[in-house]
Image (cartoon, rainbow, N blue to C red; front, side):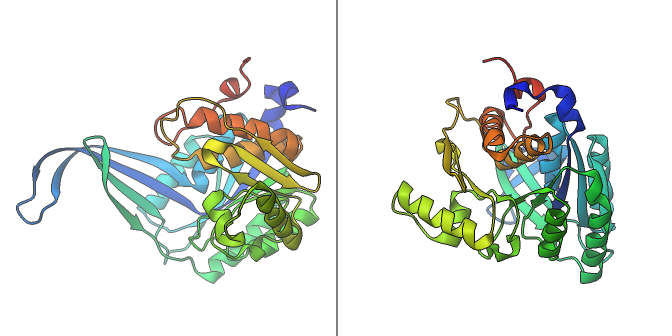
Length: 314
């Protein structure tokens, strides 16, 4: 099957299990008319509030907007933010599978916006308890058979402490396993099907490269060390490059005006997972994911892509 022949009906049967750090993005918008008499900071008179899905929840949202199905397995707190996040997730068509840890603060990123710019960001977070993470692993095993592809969305918040075990279970069940990685220790992602670092993330692991040949050598070494089928390097305005056993496949970025790169990585890996779940190979799926990233950077804010946009006639 090729991407061009992938029907809406085929994609609607594809099911992705997203596992990772879900968070709530809060935006407070307001007017800035004066400087505080207490400190040299602007006073923001809040006039509007908005809440959106963030982290792994936004990745899952990108999967459902393109036309596939998604379940979201995540550990959250038992607080107001977690219930708000669950309502947003369920309302978007994603199946929420939330483990609750009463000691945990659900990760919230609160952005204060005034005069069309971000003035301040406040992060509320801590790390989940081991017992809750262990129960997440048991839930993962139960959910696995009903899904075609597993996508681990690692934001470094502590929700993927048992990722090695889950990767092994998924691969033993014959599932495609994609990982959006974090940090400098990629050994925890060993035996996944593919990882999708950006330039800065990959450089943190393999060091800087002199040229394309040096990059290919280092990326292939990493792929072999970790026993991966592929490493997909996302390169912003340079497109993306897939390194696999056949060599490399480079897909240039789409030439279009860039408004906002927020969440583009979520769109790319979400689309890649949806295409893999629908039966495309990674080499067939990468150009589609690249197209999705090119569409989404032409929109303002954390945006998504629909089936119609993705497969519109050129």
